[in-house]
Amino acid sequence: MAIGYCILIFGGVNAKTVFSDLHIYNTLLKSWFKTETTGMKPHARSRASLNLLEHNQLVLFGGYYCHENTLNCLSSLFDEKNFNDLNILFMDQNNRWKQILVDNPPPGRSGHTGNIVNSCLYIFGGVEKKDASPVYLHFFKVLNNFLKSSL
Image 1 (cartoon, one colour):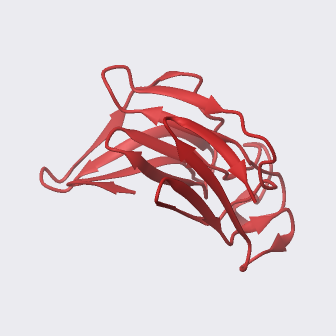
Image 2 (cartoon, rainbow, N blue to C red; image 1 turned 180 degrees about the vertical axis):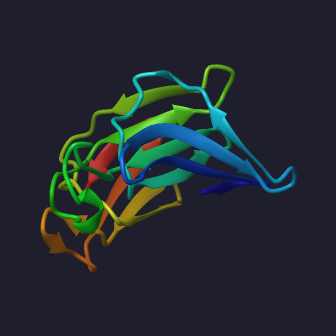
């Protein structure tokens, strides 16, 4: 996800570890920075969507997690867990995470795309358990920092 001259990345996975950190690449300085956060940090994951809600609020939805001791977790999307949680990061002096509880969230999914249009977060495609759902669509209405789920 990009904000101005910065590219933000949350989480990810390598051959040994699943991450839950936030890194920022400044395209002007050509440098990476790890950003410290407070609050209830989302569980480690990869393949989640991260979107800009307002000038200082990021919305993280879904993603995939495999246990670090699971062999070949990178070779299969279907070994472990797809999340359906919704988290907001308030990018201010505290960089505080807050999980938002919503009624009727979509099933857990990863590898999807998320886009915010007219204060609604649209989730499209991705993988739910073992089923790829390229025509899947769900949206969350976003009003005054409060999220309500809607089908």
